Amino acid sequence: QVQLVESGGGLVQAGGSLRLSCAASGRTFSTYAMGWFRQAPGKEREFVGGISWSSGSTIYADSVEGRFTISRDNAKRTVYLQMNSLKPEDTAVYYCAADRKRLGALKWWEYDYWGQGTQVTVSL
Image (cartoon, rainbow, N blue to C red; front, side):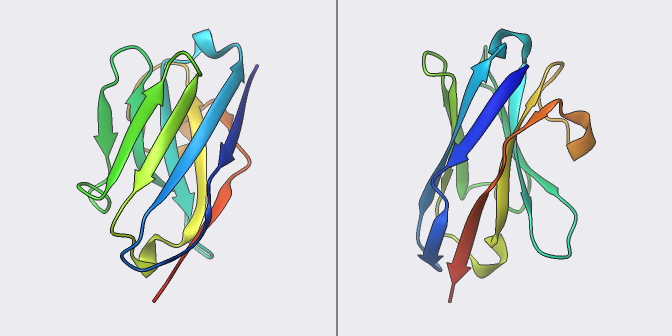
């Protein structure tokens, strides 16, 4: 089993920044990549981006490309989501997830483990 714990959410004004963290524990060696998703009220959970543990390769959704950056600290088994130039439409619950097989799976059901989520609210 793998446990994921997100932190760092909060309230920020449009144009501001936040950094989310996702700490992984347990059998993390069994996971190939990590993904970040978000879910706004009444909407489907959507892919934000992902990173490979081994190479650090990243992939992003078009909606966040150039504003969000994903990084990882292998020693701490922690993944980060740096969010800059935040917009009100970025408001959502943000989740990290672990995929045992590959980087960049776009659908939430393709992931094996999930964190509990952290709320990000961007005000005007």
